[in-house]
Length: 469
Image (tube, rainbow, N blue to C red; front, top):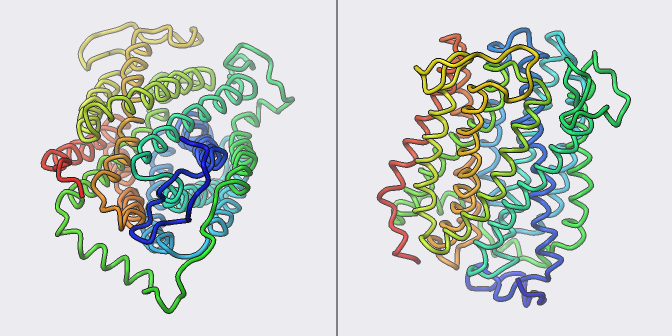
């Protein structure tokens, strides 16, 4: 990425810049992924969600159902709000004031997770779940606007590189934040020591699980600190067309949606992405919860699990970017979806006494070292496969949109791309919650995620990427 100034905020032809923004602007934009990733890594996946399910709720199955319903509620809120916000992000005014507003609510709601005490009463659980819903919605609303900035920072030929770098840096930020929390602060209730075998660096009440509860405020502080360069150095639009020359945002959004049937490949891709993104998000939302319930993992095991998966995600993002350039985005997406299905099926094949559904293994001995049982190691191997291919799916999806979208409407389609990832975001968590509650089985609840991955894979088959623009 060259260190050159922006010739103009956007080209008149279609919203694509001719030269990249200054290097510090690109680095600052990439730092958004670094800033936001601890929410997804610490809260949604590895530490807080399993803690809530296994320590705050009355029982693990009940906790998973509650968490699933909360995630579904957040998805509905995102689905209702993101289309209009995406339209506003396309050719209208400064974006940073919107981003700042969402950031304030995100930081406040993350900090509120501190009140998730073990065995909390119903009112406290409702408050914590409401904070989680708000945090989830604010994180996604912010992403609508930061994603819409991509075509104003680099020319179309560099969108894939910028997108892939963002994913890799985001995973690295998640890894570092997880290492800090699990390695230096959050303790194993059985030993009172952190993942690194150390005394926690903060004098916290372990009986009240203050280390686990601190995950929310820590993610809030991390986001607020590392977003500072974004607000200082990422250029925002200096001017827009007069309001009299613009159509209402909803009218433009409706016109774009009505025109999708004439762009068959784009329509199929957006629907496919909508489905497999739902499935992928559900895997990350419930994977740590499932592992903790099957093996009785505490903070140490979850910390190791999270660090290993996040590290594989960094490598996956880098490898996927190289493959994207060599074999194309569609092939990267489809192969990754197949491997995701293999990994998810492998995870579900493990229980305390079996691997691959029918092979007997010695169950984990209570108090034994982390990942000392065969079941845990097999579970971890399949989970690493999921972590390896998750980043390429997401980064290649952005790159594929850039290849399919007409350059004169690039920003509009990036807004629609954000919408496609959110409009049904509630379905997979809702299905997991309903199946879990109806069957009383976390395994069956997790198995329902495969429906979304298979449907997305099927719809990707007829997408033609050669007919570019």
